[in-house]
Length: 275
Ligand code: SF4
Image 1: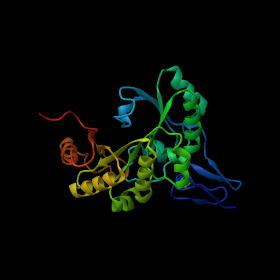
Image 2: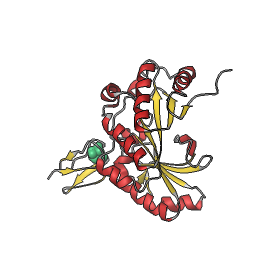
Image 3: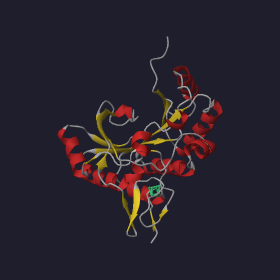
Image 4: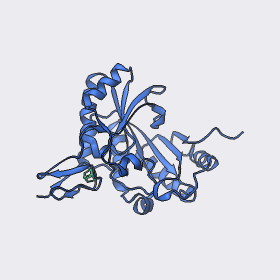
């Protein structure tokens, strides 16, 4: 019997014994379950600025973790080894253990990050519930491929988000192999709900033109976003033959966009400015 998943905008209808697009959700006996609930494939105490979040608990560390799977298939994926290529590795750590680890280490937040937490949101939700009961905040770093149902579940629980806005609609079609519409809708819903949100665009030299960036800026202004990170591309996966984005390219975009309607525009993954 086929079964439906409502974790992201794809709303996969999955055959008995089969997997959804993300390869993380499985139809087992007519019920969609996680392929490996709790199998954590990356765990680190990162500076929160690395998420990047510059305006939420600044100067603190965040206990960051991931499980395998992603709802998009970006040609440039920077984390494909753990998001797409290896669905089996990791060690089982339950939500209560994660929250307890953060508390014992004096870390004020837990971040669901590195891969795509929407596809393992039941684990994130359970962890967020326990963390909140201990006074620990939670952060979701996501591609924004929300379903309406996911937003309903997550908005009351997650304290802060960094959402990628990867490019324009054509970029999503041809390079992300996804859809920009749920991303824009999700960003708007998070802003309206009042949760903390910062948006990131990884800019690829030769693709992210000033015109594209200005059109993204207009969308973010319309949605009420006040923090935008412009970060540098590093060659990966199906785009491994492109050259990395230069620091001067990223700084020139950040300079163009600063003071043009978004309160904070930050350049990221770059060295110090040349003097
Ligand atoms: S999380 Fe998204 S991609 Fe994965 S099975 Fe569910 S609807 Fe499909």
